[in-house]
Length: 329
Image 1 (spheres, one colour):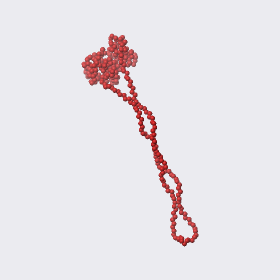
Image 2: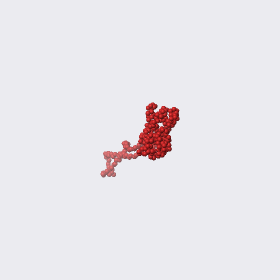
Image 3: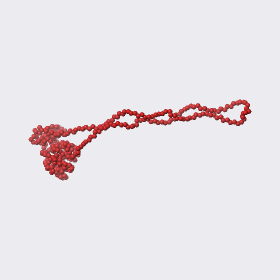
Image 4: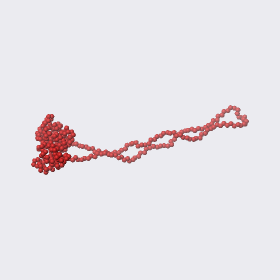
């Protein structure tokens, strides 16, 4: 459970907030209202030390009468509502200056709804002081920067190896042979011939053989080089950027009671003033906007119950005004 509270400049703002809380299905029996303003017949008169004459609804009057843990009076009432000790004096000062305090105790799931309703009717004036809020929405735009980097783009690999190739070549070679030939002759020996003695002769034959000499020669050169060129490359990419749309939030329309002047003159003139009946007209309009049917007979029991919670015993007197607001839609 959590307590949500706001301070209103005027009581009629707080009253409209009560009706809105009821229409939203929030527990109206947990709404506590305290004001030092003049409220005719709508609240219970109370006397608060340090503030003087004030008016409170049934829940606030019950809290002001005292609780066993908190005691009676303004401090006890606010402690009973769950207002922190640090805020009690500030809230009391606001009421002392003629403003209206309204608080409601809701479940955690209802906090956002109750806070929004009270803030709307209080003109976003919170019971807790707040610093000015600045919301910064960054507008982000991506920019395209195109550069280059080196990557492998293929190439050639040069490998050399030695292989053996059989070759054949002819060459003319010379060779000598020794031939021994005997011839039969018959002639006398010369006296000078030294024929009768031992002799030995050597006659050598000479032959040629091929001699192979290998010599390496450069017969071909393979030149390898790289050429560098330029070309225009087209890059297609998607860039992101933030689009910020600013739309004004429509302000809840201000209720204009003067539109009901004719109905008021015919129905309530001489008994009440228009300001007193205006909440009933407004309640009827809000009821019509919130209802999902146009059949008044289906809506009336709920409307009466909701109205009586904050305006006990006054339904029969102001039903005509509520119905006029309902039909105006």
